[in-house]
Length: 458
Ligand code: CO
Image (tube, rainbow, N blue to C red; front, side):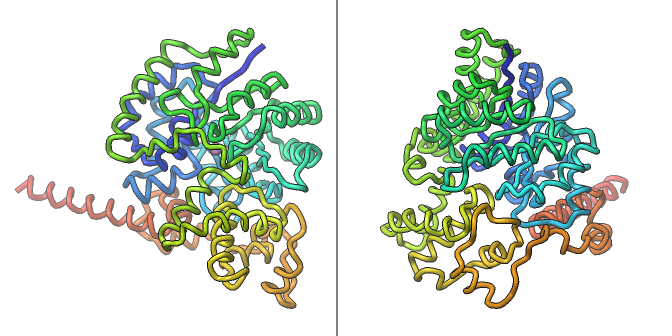
């Protein structure tokens, strides 16, 4: 019996515990040990890494990927990709999706875990085809959520859809840490029986379920689990790598993990954690167990966003009403899973409904969603809301990206000399403001170097 591990310290644990603020200079030294630890893969890119590199860390995200790749020749590098949204929050045209995925693989990604927030597989078709063509392994992802319309059959149907698209793995993704051991067991078993592909399971330790959930998932036949090295584990991140390997090895599973390397990695990140606690990057609260997510069935990160939004408006006493409104908004929208970008959209709308009256203000994202710009809602959207937003207009029923004009060539021309590579063009399309600032700063520092060189010749 075998069980393999995906280490999340560089991506999801980094994202969940310290809002992706770990610069490459803080983890580059430990890459050789991560490379030799025996993981199935090292999740190191995607999700918020791209945005955070450009926005907060003054790092070229592509350069980060190349450096990780250069140091990790023995372990697969993995990324998370939001389907037609790529690493952003809206749908991109197909030419952008194709080139982006191709460049991810060229720069070092081996495994791409692809998801769509609505489990609408039309939104993952192009990214999946591009990933397979580039030679990557595709983990076709099912976003787990609890709702009256999501059941075992619906998950199996999504998994079958993924198999048709050519995915080599199915990933069951519980972004909120609310999948119970029983649900994990049932879903893994049903999916494995129905599609026969290896299954990876992703959860968060937020509510305290995760260790039990993984144990039962493995019992049901899961092939890969996502964990984080213990010093960067727990709370809103993944449960600890070492603990799970200890338990699973006792049950006779071969994990392939190297204990000495794990110790070394843990020591390294323990020192970094101390630093993060001291400078406030890591708030100890996020490492604690919090069962609120079970009560409200919303991801922990969404809860902290709501608290932040309300605090900023000096309305924190409205929190219970906002939390009660979240399920109503979700129902009106046809029960979208609460994952980026839907979690943010639903949270903002619920807050606005409570503070200013139900649907008195409707965000442009929610309008776009109701028009069909994010894909097919899992369940029916409230007729009342449709009327309010669409009037007599018909919603879009085709794949939204079919309506988008190609963008890559046009942007390349616009950027001219500022972009030095396709990667620069892609960064700019994905995050125009942040990328422009980054590219201009790079240009400035290059000019300075040139000036200095000239002076030096004098
Ligand atoms: Co996650």
